[in-house]
Length: 449
Image (tube, rainbow, N blue to C red):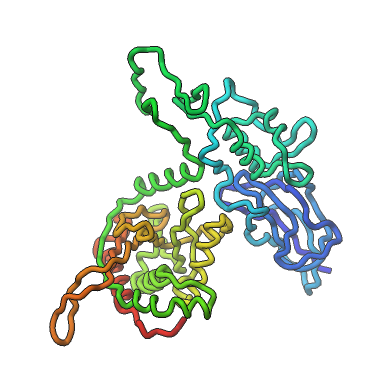
């Protein structure tokens, strides 16, 4: 009987190994395609590894708590196929046990502990009693200043009393919430700020953070730091230029208002403006493919696929950009399903790692916050990003067969930020205008949804 080699999957660009937490299936158990075989952990996320094929689990090569390199064969599955199958990595794992797909050491903002008098020893894989700690838990513990002795006292709800991410984050919430009054210093009691005996406040050294007696200093969580670094690097990499146009979306607004109730009853989906915007962007990219590029080693990489990212808010308030792949090949119904699904799972922290990568263009809706326009920062390594503003009723000149009239219309600003190294004003301006043209030419009688 042929056997398929199950290898340790790659969880991200910087991940080179993962730790086996638990084998859900044992030798001799039958497995179905996409059924969970084992649970693994990295320093970013705990995940489930699904079966790539159906068959019988014949061999397990690594036991729980073992740390295995990405690409290493970890098990063999016997199949009924007619020939041997090459080593098969599992499809990108989905978060396990409610773990979210955002960086896992993103501890709650209100959980910043008082700094200990001396740096505790870094947590190890196992306690003296043999209790195992995953890389994820050890990373959070080290970041939050939790030593081995303190970590050993945290009750665990995982298999065999193992501490998981939710356990350590719950513990952090219970910790004393002291305000930080300076680098490495904490006030003696929450809400009471330390004062200096000197009659003159000390001059803050260059680069340090000075605060008033009533100021609260909040540590940035890891995801916010990653976003900050990404945005600063984007500005450093790309000379940003932003162009603006105003478009008349009256036909789109009237069409949506007329069909949204029946649409939801018929398809079980809400119809929003976002899939309509993405449809127009995908059409415009096909007309101007040099906007769908990236720059690498001084060369322009023209992307074969049109993968459009849409900025979505996480419960923490941070933003994430799930990607709709091959958006130009989907009709409005298909785009609606993808937009709703990705937005819902972003709010629930259930996005998979592969769903937030490989975007070639990004759309962000600043109108959600009531803003009429914005100057978005390019999502590297892309070269352009579109911001859509709030739709507002405004008086506008309308051309008719009887002459020009002033009428109340639904108007919206679009702003395109682009990388002036490779996208000049003619290309950027023409591309933005083409998006506007597609929106204004929207057919209010369309029935393809």
